[in-house]
Image 1: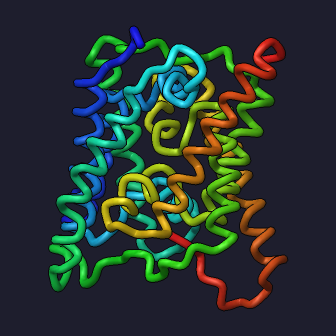
Image 2 (image 1 turned 180 degrees about the horizontal axis):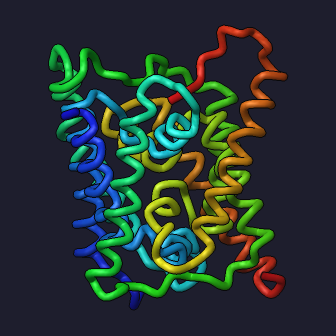
Image 3 (image 1 turned 30 degrees about the vertical axis):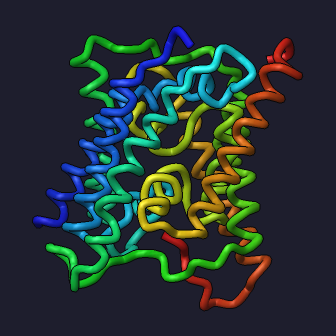
Length: 148
Length: 143
């Protein structure tokens, strides 16, 4: 119960953060990425503010024996930089730089009156499904664990 | 630089960091939206319900705030649909095989000082800048 209230509340807070910072505005995101145009550095402050907080808090939290409402921390176990990580980041970066949408802002924008976020999210689901197929072909071992 | 909004951007960013902090401290989870979204879509997956709660909050928080602040920006609605579909497919494919997106690798991974997340973040930012350059300045007249 507490876990679900925390999830709902942190989701709301995340959505408000994306709205206040205008990460939900793809024009604003592209104005940051377009360094050769009329450059708008605002997004650097969004990332700076967010990472500034997580840098202060995450390592302290991860030294605790357990989270408040769960038995353990579910953080990625590997720190390996492999080709799948990097090719994924390249492909993701093309999609982001083309449209100005990444998944969080697109989901947060589903009700603000443009069809674009919904179309992006539907296509995102298709991309996910294709990646799962591709991973199964590339590595047919049934022990493949879905990433989080 | 006339559209620079330092205060609201910094404030919004800090809220993202606080949200990610609370989710890790209380529930032990990483606020990585692509991972949460994939987990929420998977029937019968453990932890599916909290992910649905988080995403519901995301839709509510973004939508309600945008409304109560008097529609602070006009949502874009004239982007070419085929390009939007291609971008969405690439986003979904890339975040799946690269294990994360702007929030998971960017906001949370950098906070954990994960080298893996730093490599991902530097890569997708650089590629996004290059893509925007190509799309706007080399093929700009076509879009």
